[in-house]
Image: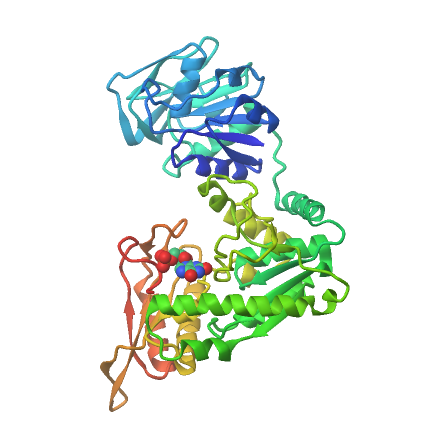
Length: 517
Ligand code: XMP
């Protein structure tokens, strides 16, 4: 892989993603990894990421300078650029030329990185110190007002660096520059394609599960669990059983997507647990959000465990047990939890709502090295339908946490209608790409007066909560065009009984969360 050495800034993951967008496999590695650990990964190139510190600070993160003698191509970014300069004999100084945010890069001599790109271009900077003198043998190819040496390269040693952040969208030519490092300086060939990824993952799963192992996977209808299950199915066929718990809190069409579309596309063996009555029974009269979540979590586990013993039913006689649990954990989760390899405890299953820690399964996590967009690409490669692959996130507790008030069958029915209308209209307005997700919320405990036809109504409001986000940690409300909002509002108030008002949530996160409960 291309190793992105993380100096503790938030950019390392983004750099890894950008490298993969250039169709080259990359991983993030901590800056204090030993030379041996790095060598063991057999890196195709090293990218030294940005970091928070000054290279001269006492607690400045360091790297083993022998890295530069491995004969592996190196690209330094921001702090990594300075680190590289210092290690290779150039000089870095604090000249007071600090730059934060957008500045203008002037390209002196194109070199390989900037050849043919605009002589003057915006780039995103964040630095106090600056490189004063490039190491010997390196050609300086660009500058900014605060950084006389803003880029350098040495084709012979296959090394280059930039002071700015090529990985952020505010550096419009950044991806091109990063790609040129990979292709033209490091001489790498792009092979990280959906087809290759899928093939490699399937081989890995076969190896992990072996010729006999049985596996189980909870399906939520979401992208991650569907793609994980599809990969495992390709690898071990009917030794995988997918379990789908229909808790009655799903949106319109979701059950069919799993039961019909997913099964048709993958041929996977599916057990559906019809648990609507059980869930609604336990939720009866409950309006406290946390209580709802706890009930749903608990009942989910019960249903899942019931399904496991059902699956075992025909196998148990032969002394078999289910050894593996398939989970759709993604790379950002892995990196954020410290990259912990072999974490055997079951962490809360985002897609399906929290499995207990004492379930004794080994985990199969085929997506643990992938980013969301790669998961989607692999899903398409495996022939999963677009409705599943492009689906927006939907919480495990489902519509129950989108009804403010207690959950009843009637209220669910009403919310399902409103939600479907909103989804249809946002999709047909071509807004799916801009919207991370759009919760539709029924304020079941609120009533307002309206007039419809000649009569007074006293109905419930529906809240639209369209948000834009990269990772759901923060979010902004999406500026949906008024005409689209108007269509949604008109349709919902006309078509959904008991709803006489549609309101728009214009709160960012923070302070609001995305969901209402
Ligand atoms: P909040 O409301 O915390 O939501 O801003 C952040 C993201 O997480 C989703 N979400 C959940 N997903 N189980 C899930 O699988 C849950 O219990 C849950 N609660 C919130 C939410 O839809 C958003 O994408």
